[in-house]
Image (cartoon, one colour):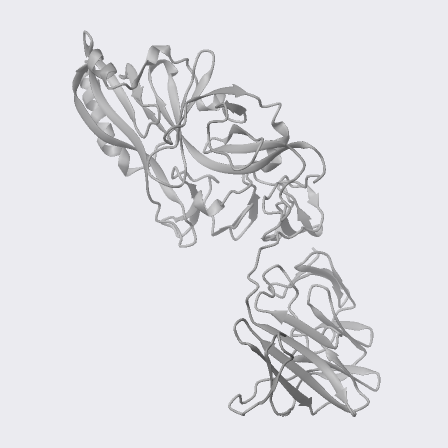
Length: 549
């Protein structure tokens, strides 16, 4: 009978590479073998007195065939080979660890989920910081994380580590320096005995082997020269690291979209599981939130895959590159920001990206020379060695006019990095003109024929730029985008341009005449409005109006 079971297990091994399986059962296995830094696990089945059939098992990854933006692969168990029968002496001669299944205590993955373990490796494992420790978290059934922790104030001066809630920078507490994430895969034996391997997103074979023990669990690192470590549960001690559960987590490596036969989509993980348990028309997942839509509803999930209670959602939009996870929501109560635990939240703070300094630069300045309004444009760039200067006469502007760039200023400078860190886009081609107490907007084109020979003037020695290239003054005629007949024109801090006339408000680029009695910004995307006696919200991203029901 045992030979028949072994044959069936072998046939199963030949098929497991075709699909993902988190748990693989081997009720016939009597012992396991592994090296000090294992890339595979050896399964031994007793077939007689002091004789064992040997099988070798590891893990691997394969394409998930999901949407183009996802980097996710499917993790699965992989049978390498089956060898002839060996004696125990032959096994021990290979200098591998030999562990009887009967010596492993009965456990399940659920015994670990939600717990935090201190990894007692005596400082032998790799670290990036000084004075740090290593912990292992089982965050959910498909996600485990090894995190490098320290006790102290915040070291992340550039806000690159995202947290689920805002944390006081000066408070001494347990914090995270580095985090890596793994898929737990389980080998299950008879009598509920099991071992766990942790597999990362890179490479084929697993990274860690967790062997439960009657006194201490053992975590074995597959990297060479790293000794095994004991695990000690310290959930309460490190509980305050929970906001860091998904710091340095790149969601596109762990999830992907799978199309169904009825043209719906599912969000699947590295085990091929439909993690939301439902099919949707559209799913977006950019960073800290999952937004799933059908024609009847919008569901929002956090990274724990918990559905958030955000009321009847009309629009949901994740705030990109926020220091703490934030989502912008319009529901029946209005527009607001929410955190990852469905609580109302303050305006998000943006993570700042480092940018290259060797990029092109432009500057614009409105000058008035003897009643003639001109735009002076300067351009330079890395390696140029010179600066271009040219003036454009704004032929539509009269001596008594008030003339400014659209934001109300007389000058504006920017470089090729402008906008990367959320800077408000200001278009120097848009000129606000005031005449006789009324205001309008004209658009000018500052292109010109560079085949014209400029006047070249050398700069002072050792100064940069080395030369100034002066092009002849150009005359430009503006295009009237908004007639000079409005009471005022104001560019908001978010870049939206409003114009006012006869007590009403219009949105430049959308309205030809003012239509709103009231228009008040509530979040980045949503403005509350009153129009024709009705109230609602306008979505700046789509120009869609949503009326109160």
